[in-house]
Image (cartoon, rainbow, N blue to C red; front, top):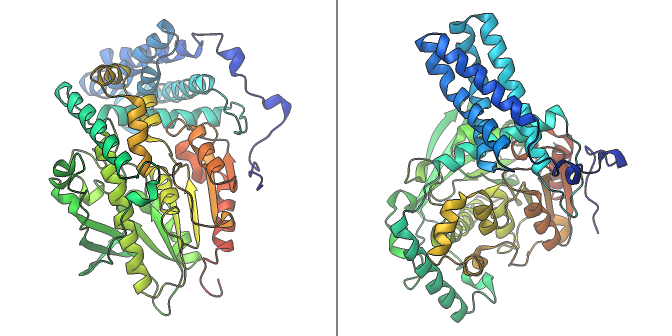
Amino acid sequence: MSEPDFDDVDLTEADEPRLPVLFEDRRPPQSAILAGVGLAWLSAALTGGLIVFLLAIVPGALLLASGLASLAMADEARARHLGALGAAIGILLGLPILLVAGFGTGLVLVGLAVAALVAEGWISFMRTPPMEDVPPASVSVRLAAEIAADDAVLGMMVQSLHTPGIEDRPRIARELEAAQALFADRGWLANPATYHRVPPAPEDVRRTRESFLGIDYSHLRFASEFEPRIEEPGRERWLDRRANRTAHAWVLEHEGPPRPWLVCIHGYQMGVPWMDFPAFDVRRLHRERGLNLAFPVLPLHGPRKVGRISGEHFMGADFLDTVHAETQTMWDIRRLLDWIRQQGAEAIGVYGLSLGGYNTSLLASLDDDLACAIAGIPATDFARLVWKHGPPRDLLHAESAGVDRPVVDEVLRVVSPLALEPKLAKERRSIFGAISDQLVPSDQVRDLWRHWERPEIAWYPGAHLSFMLHGNVRRLLETSLDRAGLHASGS
């Protein structure tokens, strides 16, 4: 059994989880900090003139509401997320606050927002239960700030997610029941790999040259040609999303003889170069390691989006949309792999982050010709995420309309990396995960590690968004790529 990489984690007895004690204090004192900072910002908003009012009213209101909710209730995750969002907005508004309110006042307000951010992260740390097979972490100012950054993103995501209307919930329940019966009858629940069809290689691949901050790349486009089967629920709704019918990818290639390729699969609400390239550190992978890189754009993301935001309708309560989104993801990426092989690729590895980690692990169960699969901070169970992060009232209404959680679990089984067996050898699989992840709880990462027969894993003492700051993550990436032979000759 490969031992997890705990290099950045101090596993001394003093770092045992403190949660059993902290959970006894149902109203942590840090809540008063959030409320107090909120009052300070609101006071500045009411006394500093119109511009200061416009800058300070939202952070102040969010922080005060979050602090009061935390003091009044045992635990309200959504209130905490909004508090973190308020603190983050306050910090981001630091420069205009300094310019308008005066240096002294602005500095105090920004300092208070930083204190509130750390306080909120501290509360979330106390509310995060320990997980079996996940190393413990000890709370610190840095860890609290990393956790709060996760919570701020959650606050923004939950507010921006598309929520099906009341009239849609019976339809969702009917689609789930019909899909469950169909999937069981076809044998796809018993053998989910057979649900996925082998796509043809793409034809008429169009290329345009583009650039982002000095990074030149090719923008690939080709017809996806994916269609849900005629008998599958939700087919017509899915096909009506016309922008999604074209597959896109960003490609960075070296001139000269063929080189190894790394397919980088982005996370939820990404799919644009200004987000994808920094997240995957393209300068290091492309220039220093000498790899060719391909960034497939997931369905409904980036130039394929059909809603207000990138990724809308991919995840959420319309579960058949999620099934079709994941199935099309596998279809499109496998077609992109065919195109890469046509370019004479020496070897192809896959590396994904978050939702991309989910798709990396799913792809590793469908393609046996990959040099490696690196699943970074991977989600592995969509239903569990929806029931954790979804608004409780909406979930209650959905359940009352007949949306049955066990049926959801069964339907999603056909696109679950925990239901399919990996085709890559164990030594070609690796994982990294955050001990204090708030977006993708650590049990989801752990479950993939167990399902993958405990391959090499790096647990870092941070949160979802901070993976690039931890040395053992970088070491795992380097050793995984080296072991797979993914480097240019002589590099």
